[in-house]
Length: 289
Figure 1 (cartoon, rainbow, N blue to C red):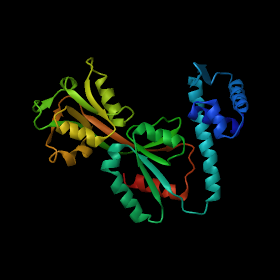
Figure 2 (cartoon, helix red, strand yellow):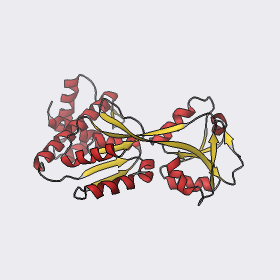
Figure 3 (tube, rainbow, N blue to C red):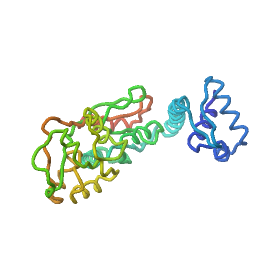
Figure 4 (cartoon, helix red, strand yellow):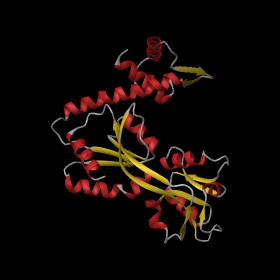
């Protein structure tokens, strides 16, 4: 097995096509097929299933893809580091939406004040996407709301926040509620893959009733607007909601039997080579948590 095999395998997975992978890599289609067969022979397992003229990656293939992407990313990283060992390098940081709205601007402003010569790129996405970008080396660091898989990542806690339930000031429900009562209300939630959605689902799984989810969205602003219009109850981070409570006439529904505390984690790949610029950012985050 060589680096070339992994590049071919990664391209086939990404494009879901032997033909397209061959075109992208400027190879003959039989050569790509042969490389995949060599990989399957080496690992003694099927990496793809071929059904109805389509290519489907197997569970074994999905596991290999994680390692293949990591190895290829490290290879590219080593090349870049050796080329630019004496230069200031850009730091690429991804955070989930809640942290990105409430804390990221202040964090980056503080870092730029201390290390103005270091260029920095930030991305706001959900926690699952941040992890995937760390594996592919599209990001150097992530700030997510759950500890990432210790097999691949180092995770350091850097803060906490509280999740609350809010509704329109005109909403019929008054005062407080137990979690079981809250489930019976129409709910507004973040999309699958977001940390806040994962936390809410983990909490709801303790109850036998199926929640009525009337809206899910990647856009926090859309959820807040829907809540203000009386569409339902919104479960979201307190620091995100506080600026909108008065302007959008929202009020909190006190949850009497549950406390939903959300933790934030500073995450990076265990195999990541940290340049001087990256070490400066890492130290700044950990000193200011």
